[in-house]
Length: 147
Image (cartoon, rainbow, N blue to C red; front, side, top):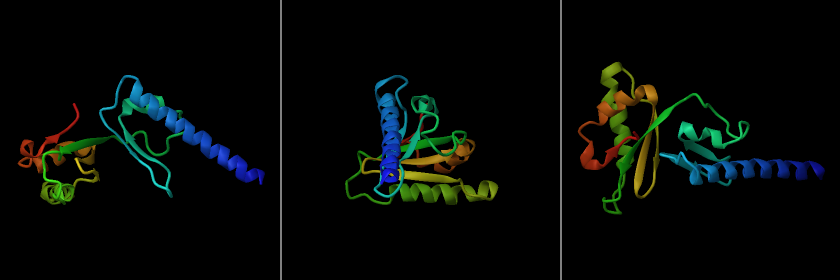
């Protein structure tokens, strides 16, 4: 009985520390240029954020690599009709297909998609190849990268 109570309080302490870090990110400078939080019932929270925001979290709260740098390429989808689908899938396909001829391998990437924006995440060292593959899709489709 005590074991369950201790596990619950440990989980609550970790959740509280994550919540505190997120609140710090949102209310104090430097404000996030990019922050993505995914919550599910069955998995731990998934968080992608600017490196400058790591200091808002206790060192033992965040898991995973703090040395891998991903660059978000954001597509503004606000002006597209609501029934538009497959935009981010098409961009991802262009990254895979548009870069295979350059160095023999596709750009490693992941993506996030919402109703009004899509974000393709590429490794920092893959950014130039990714942007090269996307040129021609460019400004007419709202392509932007953080400064």
